[in-house]
Image 1 (spheres, one colour):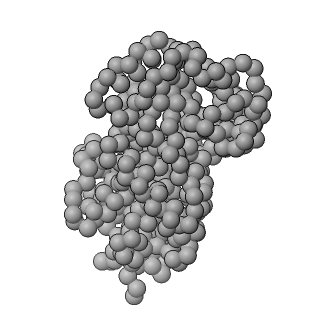
Image 2: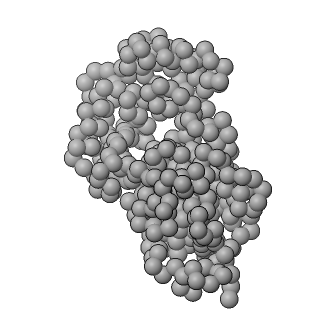
Image 3: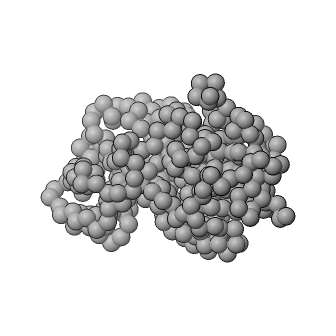
Length: 355
């Protein structure tokens, strides 16, 4: 019997980063994935953003996770033989005097100084609606998500560890010392299946709040800047006269089917970013489901009744920013070298949610 160290379920961005880390440590693994069914990993903007939200707060664990992610993706491009990582500043357009004042307050704080760049007076960018001023967010970047995921898939396939089929939980045999799944035997299994965890009989009790997101690719005669631009919605140049705009949040319709409502919402948002009259033609409309959690923190760790069952999931809209660092952190924990981050350790939910 050939014993695997780990079976990894899910080859989204979390499972891909974890699989890559495990392989790098010489572990014997197999990865199950059914072509990213309804997942957000292909559709996501892939932005690594240290400042987030209406209140302009630092992203959770950004001080350690974001520098690590940028180094990880640069090295990964060489390993996978693909180009998909780009350093990009985020140009934040203020929508009100209050938002500009908040920026001034944040920029005066030492903890924010390296992330918030110089301010620009109103009407500095002629083609954009910066009536209340603007500023740059530094140390940001973006990952071309589809290119990255396809490169990961090709890499895993070349190592003969990718099994392209839907994982069937009912076939998992936990009766022996080793975990058995068909002809495979493993010491442990890690579930990284994104929002599909709701179908998982072992970890669906965790407090997940998945959210569908939709993105449009638009062709336009507007002058599209090279930066990521944010004004309520974000836009990102992706061609000579094309840009992507997103995204929506929908916690009710959890599927990857594009909707008329989201299309209308995003088409209405696009003109608000630019000055003047412009044409916007939809060339692509995509949707996926983010594996968000009720606490906005990931769920990492072991099942309370069977330590062979592991969870590495719940990164929500921050998968591309957080997964590289936490894949290393999780593997360090698996190897006995560290304790799990207390805010991410799923054991914090056992008393309240597990029965």
